[in-house]
Amino acid sequence: MTLLRTLLTALAAATLMAATADRADAQVYQHLDQLALRMQGEARTLYSEVRLHYSHTSAYPHLRSDVIQLYRAAAHVHEVAHHRGSLHHLRSDLAKMDRLLHHVQRLVDSIDFHTSHGHGGHTHGAAYHVRQVLNRMESLLHHMRRDVASLTSPPIHHGGGMHGGGFHGGIGHGVHWHGNGVHVGVGRGHHGTTLVIGGRGFGLRIGR
Image 1 (tube, rainbow, N blue to C red):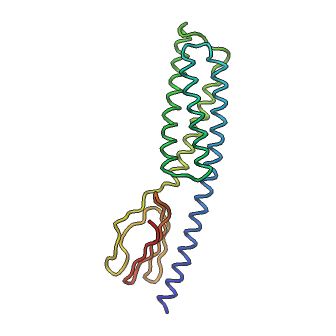
Image 2 (cartoon, one colour; image 1 turned 135 degrees about the horizontal axis):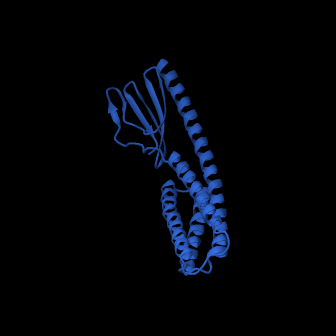
Image 3 (cartoon, rainbow, N blue to C red; image 1 turned 180 degrees about the vertical axis):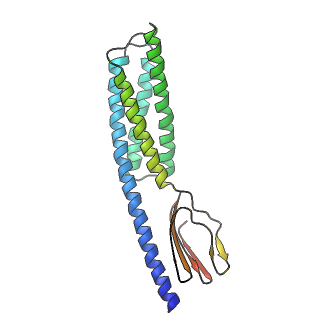
């Protein structure tokens, strides 16, 4: 009876831990969705600012094309985040957006340098607005990448097995419970949540 009570307690603890982890993930996805929507709005603003200030520079077609790509990338990330899509997909898309954003920043620097020396056309008005938008986008992007990193904890390891009368093998990052010789762990990996229960000569893994 003691073992049965311990197992029931372990299962209750595992259920609670898994539910808590799922709620936390849902909150992060919701926050990521909000950030992605803001990024999409900033990309729209950037397009307007670039057209206003740089349309009479020789590099404007290049800059315009890159800004359109940024907007499309932001819209795509928003769509993926809104539907709680693949974390690998999000991580890859955000890395590409980061590279594109820094390319646009360098291009703006180059245009400003050349136009200030009388080459490559001229800018209109206070072009520092463009830099302000780029800085806000960079801050949002870094925040989004941190959110995705919080969801993609260290992967669950798949080498565990029975050893010494219990379950031997890691479950990566997660929460753990011990009681009366029984161990329960709930961890998150790239493929979702895994539950491990082990001890007293048995081992059980639920998940991938």
